[in-house]
Length: 399
Figure 1: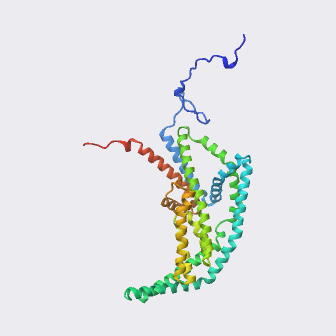
Figure 2: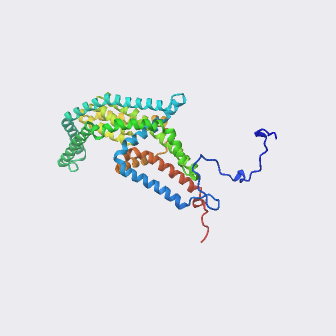
Figure 3: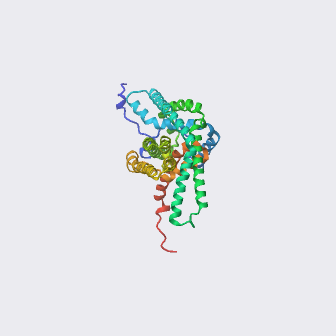
């Protein structure tokens, strides 16, 4: 008997369930074992809660146990996340993913070494200047404070600002300047010794290369592990987190770089002896909202007062930082970040300090990503609450 072509063979009536009742197609995953009566097993609410609690507990336990060695790995993950869009663009124009990852990591390491070779000798030289002139700085600040207290005593009367109060204020101002100068010199001069240089120089680039090379495959694998019931919701939460985190991270790094260049150049132009160090410090610490600018402003004002001894230079330094804040708030942030960042400044400050207290430098690296995740989840549950009967139930009209 001659057979019809395969496309003309009449389809047999299907005994399966109608298409309308079939679940939406999902990426292939392990098949669930069937019950004796033929029905698929369904996870209970208690099992889902136990799975979530177990994952959170395992994550916290891992952070607690391995926190001394996790810092270079987390730093490598941050680098891979930051460079992934660039690697993806290179892949689209025909560059193999492995070669693109190697070129990007090599370029980043070369840039870091260049900055270190150029800036670190200058910073060490400025530390020498600070240690050499610290006594004169203390005397200059003490004299300026004494003059200001004398002027206040003449204006308000000696019964408010007597000599003992003036001596106490002058002594405390000198002690504060001496302590800040010694601490800054110790921090900058021994900053490299605070970290395991060998670990950071060798482990971080190697781990960053492998993470950047395998980033798309890792995302596909993690997506395949998501529970099918909540996969769509988890993917949307992940996309929202990526949008918030990428906008904050990339925009904040660019903002810190621009502010560091501006403050260092402006303070050096004012001939402030430690202007380069203070400007770079203020720009780098600007990733903590307001803290970096305030710290740099206080240090620059104290140094200007100690070096020049007149309030005109203090006002000039103040004008530099006020201009920087205006440019940051009305030009840099709106153009680089816009409305994409949904992390409030207070929430970022709390997350950074909480992470630093809990896990040190590792906690600082993890603070903003965790803050972004918690913020996205909180907004998701807030939307769920506003759409639920808990919020929409009408108020009672009687007893």
